Amino acid sequence: MLDQRRNLKMAVSAHAYVRGNTSKFYDWLNSLEKGRVPEGPSIWICGDCHVGNLGPVANADGEVEIQIRDLDQTVIGNPAHDLIRLALSLATAARGSDLPGVSTALMMEEMIVGYQEALVDPQERPKPTGKATEPIKFVLKQALKRRWRHLAEERIENLKPSIPLGKCFWILTKSEKRDIDRLFRSEDVRKLMTSLRHRNNDSSVEVLDASYWMKGCSSLGKLRFAVLAEVGHRKKSDLCLIDIKEAVRAAAPSSPHARMPRDNAQRVVEGARSLSPYLGERMLAAKLQGKPVVLRELLPQDLKLEMDRLTRTEIVASARFLSSVVGKAHARQFDESMRKSWLAELQRDRLKTLEAPSWLWTSVVDLVSRHEAAYLEHCRRYALVEDDET
Image 1 (cartoon, rainbow, N blue to C red):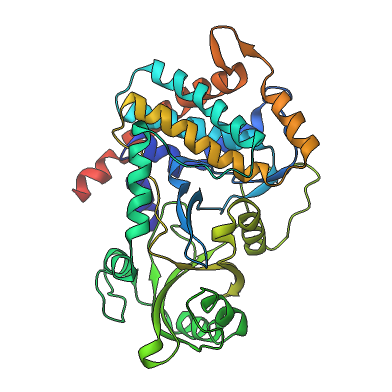
Image 2: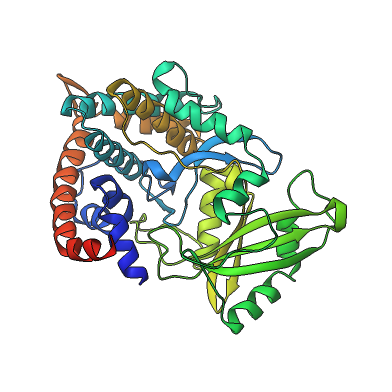
């Protein structure tokens, strides 16, 4: 059932297929000849840097910033891989918005500009400016207005202290329920739940309800649980929703001599703290059902960006801003010499008629053609299943 659900979600559009089928991108990366793309300094990268993995994220103090919001594939690797993945995602979003190919060319030019600006001044906070970035500013404004009731209505469909079983939430087995209760009695989880500024550090944590969560695309078929918990007592208590997600071995290529945690949950948390500190400080690596998992409390301000049906000016401006977000995530890991050498490397093989480096342009052209063909084949294989569902 979960495999079928994933296949149907990926058949919705070419953009959804690119988001859901990371293996094709990694196969392409692994097949590259040495020198095809520049080799940047080995740092923590997102590994799956598509548009949907960027968005508003809140920290423990309630501050909100657009950062990388999904680090399942984070590894120590080549930062160029994040740029290519983001460019591919934006290119398929442009195709989904019926924009001409020139939009993709302009988009990649602005991507490089935004990324390099972030490297030059990594301390400056990226902010969407101008009318053309209105889709991003709108999501950011919505994030700042949201409260617990919005999260509850959106995720669990009601404000009552329970998780309604149904299409997305399934009943737990006895062993799953027992292990979750045991996990939430640990001091590490209690400290995570009380880390938000407005909560008392000595508060207790009680599990009110929990269920298996059929969510996402890449996580379907793996451990994924939603836990509704109460922090504190009586009138001073807070309800919170915790996402428990199995951490599996990263498929993203890593640098040959990279030293990363062997435990995949610890890898995800360490990568998050380097790339997306607002999110990383709210994450915990643990074990559940004998498997590594990552816990994080879902906050109302955590949203993902939707880049559907944009105009040419909107997607071009958005590309510049989003690449600056990625650039900042990379830059905070560089020292001055690393930053300068990587900036110089990004300038190589520039075409006279196109400001974007040729390695980025040719990579995206190749990837888009491969993914378009694979998407159509995917739709052909699952068209009958989709007809049956509808």
